[in-house]
Amino acid sequence: MKKLLVTYQVKDADWWLLNNKLEQTVGHLGIRFEFFRKRHSQLVGYIAHIPNEDAMRDILLNTTTVSTRLKENGVLLETIEILEAVPSGGVSQPVVQ
Image 1 (tube, rainbow, N blue to C red):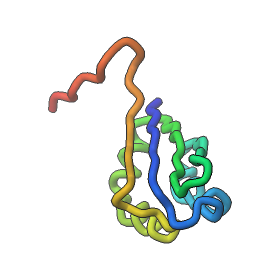
Image 2: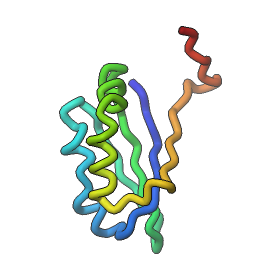
Image 3: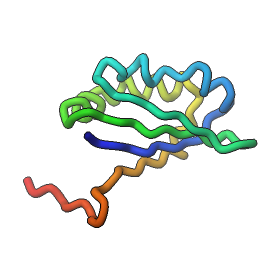
């Protein structure tokens, strides 16, 4: 299972927390979300629990759908930060292809 921490600024954090479409857009892939926000700011975020590599590949292949949803949700695209969880005690190793 992969875990991603994603943060970004939105136009209206209260609206985003009530109306974002993340689960509707990619929930069918088995992805679970935990949502967060920074008090008194427009910074929001989530931890995405991604069950397998196939789900991750589907997300990356459907970037148009994801991008459209982000814009609909008032996400300021230039503020997106994505961190990937790494195994405890180690640094992730590059994938050799």
